[in-house]
Length: 292
Ligand SMILES: NC(=O)c1ccc[n+]([C@@H]2O[C@H](COP(=O)([O-])OP(=O)(O)OC[C@H]3O[C@@H](n4cnc5c(N)ncnc54)[C@H](O)[C@@H]3O)[C@@H](O)[C@H]2O)c1
Image 1 (cartoon, protein in one colour):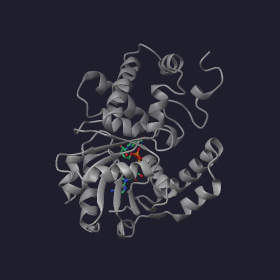
Image 2: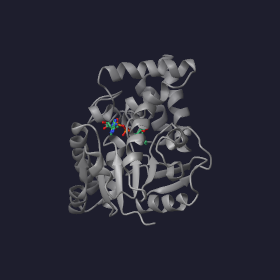
Image 3: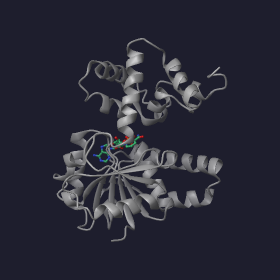
């Protein structure tokens, strides 16, 4: 089977990036969201990313603009799914929302469509049955797409093994480095390690052992990194981080989830809303002198 048409569900932080890279790689792309505002913001974010890529990697600005113009932005599920060879789902990290979306698209998708989810910490087996085609269901989990280019391919026990090489090739065609997660694992490979790191940073902050800035500085200086754990959280989105942290049962995670919730309630979701632990577009950790 050859993948030609891709349907992205959810036009947020991640869905936008996967849709843009798919269009840049020559796929026909439709991106679906229930929120018209999200679809509008998605297009603006794509323009911003293309502009940044043109500046940083010399990407052809016109090719980028043409790719965006080729994408169908829609809140109509039937338009989004038309003739799709593959769905990559990036809706909110919430079991009830994802279940509803998979039930909905499982009913209207063409028979040929492969179903993939971008869930960060849930497992594909949670949604495989409700989608109506467990054998065609697999996690295909991107990171940032343009700067962090690993894509995790994680089947559940009922996934047809023939899907794996196909998804590996699809990942490569999107300029990602595919890695196979041999067993279902919350957080795949990288996120399992990242959550331990973020959790440790959260514990240091809520335990009042160090400030946001000093915790970030420790990491940035010693590892020569452009951002520390709280900068990373701002780029992931504090709402997504909260959805993950709130499900943990240990005291430190509960305290950190409560702290993240105060930011969310204040509308501070990170870079995407202009403020999280830092203020954007010029966060303190990117300013001259931060590491002195
Ligand atoms: N942000 C990241 O860096 C990142 C990285 C890898 C994976 N993910 C995963 O991708 C998924 C999306 O995360 P995000 O950060 O892009 O979230 P986000 O909040 O930025 O975007 C989610 C989008 O889903 C839409 N949505 C909600 N219900 C919907 C429905 N019923 N139908 C269609 N759209 C609906 C929302 O309107 C929103 O635009 C999550 O599962 C997350 O774990 C995120």
